[in-house]
Image 1 (cartoon, rainbow, N blue to C red):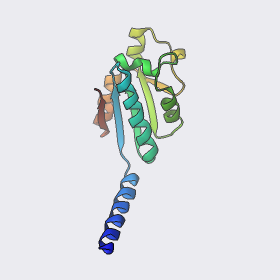
Image 2: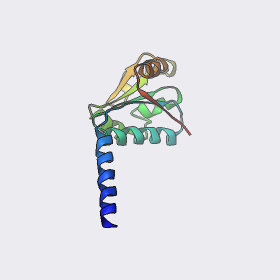
Image 3: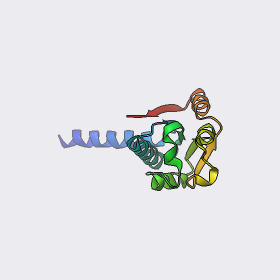
Length: 137
């Protein structure tokens, strides 16, 4: 019985270590105004970018989720700062959303980058083979 358990443990460790070496590209779509949705999205991207350092991650924020990118309103500023410090993750805010909502660059948290159009960014990433995750309720 102990040999069987040893084989199972060895197999588990091999699969776990192998899976962490497999590079993937994941883009998170965050548009919901709910703080819970924004916190979940930031938590998912933050944890995955830590555990899978050979993979690439993007968080694309637009619409009702824009508060998560703002210095005065974000409930996830610590997680965004942690992600911004890593080479394998980028957090983007849609310039179209910024224009519609009167958001200026100086209002953004450090580490927030911008893209001209969030939906086009998501479409391009999917076309390039990135995995798509829609964060929502």
